[in-house]
Amino acid sequence: MNLQEDFMRDQRRQRRKRRLQRLALNIAGVAIFLSLWEAAPRLLPWLNTSLFPPPSKVAAAIMPLAVSGELWEHIASSLARAISGFSIGAIGGITTGIICARAPWFNGLTEPILHGFRAVPALAIVPIAVLWFGIGEPPKVVLIAWGAFFPVWITTLIGVRDVNSIYLKSAASLGANRCDLLFLVVIPAALPFIFTGVRQAIAVSLVVLVAAELSGSINGIAYMMSLGNQLFFVEWMFIGILLLGILGFTADRLFVWASARLFPWYRTQ
Image (tube, rainbow, N blue to C red):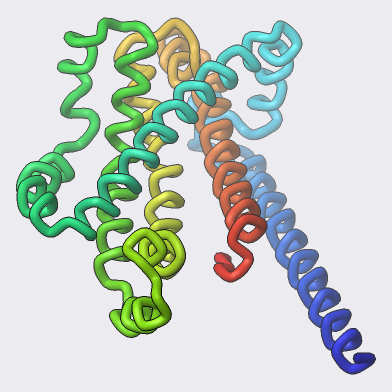
C-alpha cells in the first residue's frame, strides 16, 4: 500500500511539475512576442506606428473602451453568438455523424449532400442567410452553426464507423444489446475522433463569427474592428485580433480541462 501511495504521489508531483513548466513556457512565449512587437517599430524605422501600433498604444486604446463598458458589450455579444452557433452545430454534427455511421442506408442518402455542402464555405452562404433571416441574430447563429457542424460530423462519422469490431463482438458476447453497444462501447471508443472535431469546430466558430458579424451587426468584436477601419482607429483593429486570439486560446484550454474531468480515460494535450 505504501508503494502504491508513493507511486501516486510521485505521479501527481510530476503532473504538477509539467503543468508549471508548460505555464512558464506559455508566459515566456507571450512575453517574448510582446517584446518583439513593442521593439519592432523602434528597430525598423520604416514601420509606421499609426498603421502598426506597438502593444503600449494598443493597451492605451483598450482602457477607454473597458472603462466605458463598450468593450465588454462587444465581447459578450460575440461570445453569445459563438456559443449558440457552436452548440447547435456540434450537437447536430455529433448526432448526424452517429446516425450516418450506424445506419448505412441513411449515410447513402445523405453522403452526396453533406459532402457537397462541406465544400461550401460559410462565407458563401452569408447573402442567403441575410436574405432568409434578416440582419439580426439568427443569420449569425446559423452561419456559425454551419461552420461548426461539418468538422464535428465528419470526425464523428469516421470515429463511430471505424470502431474495432473486436470491441463490438466482445460486448455482444457478454449480452450487450444495440443500445448498450452504442452508449457503452461505440461512443466511448470514438471519443478521440469526436473530440478532435469539436476542438476544430471551436476555432472554426470564431473564424465564422467574424464573417457573420461583418454581414451586418451593431455590436461584437468584428463590428468593433470594422468600425475601427472606417474611423481609422487601427488600435481597435488590433484589439479585436488580440481578443479573438485570447478567446480562442481560452476556449481551447477550457475544452481540454473539461474533457479531462468528464472523460478521465481520454487524455488530450
